[in-house]
Length: 259
Image (cartoon, rainbow, N blue to C red; front, top):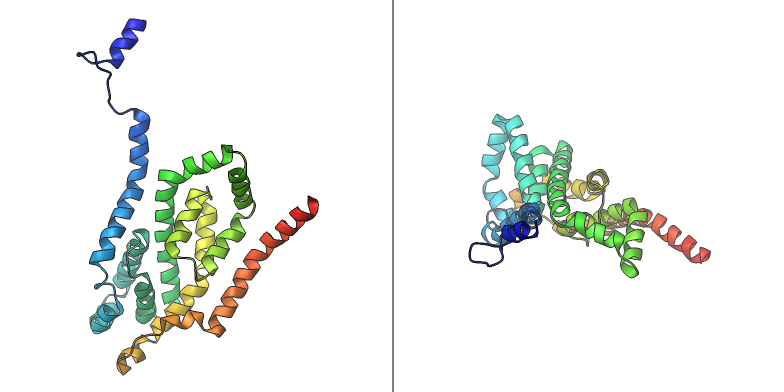
């Protein structure tokens, strides 16, 4: 039996068989979606910047409006699909897509279309990262000791609050907010719900800017994308972020008192 086992692990020339194990092949297969997303994102960053820009929207606005008026349902479906692809592959132009949603469909239902598409795209990249890396990384963090274990426990105890917080704070890049939850083992349901609800304030603001693009185009100007940092917009959003962070602060204070 021992000889048979040796024969199975060596080739005809007596050298050890270096073929890939099933576990290694499965690990590579699990990473393929994430690798594909990162590859397309890198290519898109250099090739699509001029196509997904405010200038491109301005130049094609009449054609877009004409197509929308003649094919409303098809326009909605195509818009959501394109937006999903932009977000899922982290392509440049997500802000332009949001503005386009407002330009074509007004603040409502444009904001709803934007939120649905962004949530679907975010969930796709979240699932790719979770399947490729997140499940194993989260399991390792759970089984570890010391500071890593404490960090993972703190994240698990405040998942809802942390998820809403990273969505509401404008300084957190959307791509980062999609990847980090996948790497720490956040459940899919929590990610989807917190993404859908958490991006509503920002989506409504930018969609409303897009809804007014007709007048901006008529004046030959560019939209003020910094509007989200205006006090009357930023302060309410930061207030929501503070509410999301409040339970985390309360738990931290209770933990210190209990020590």
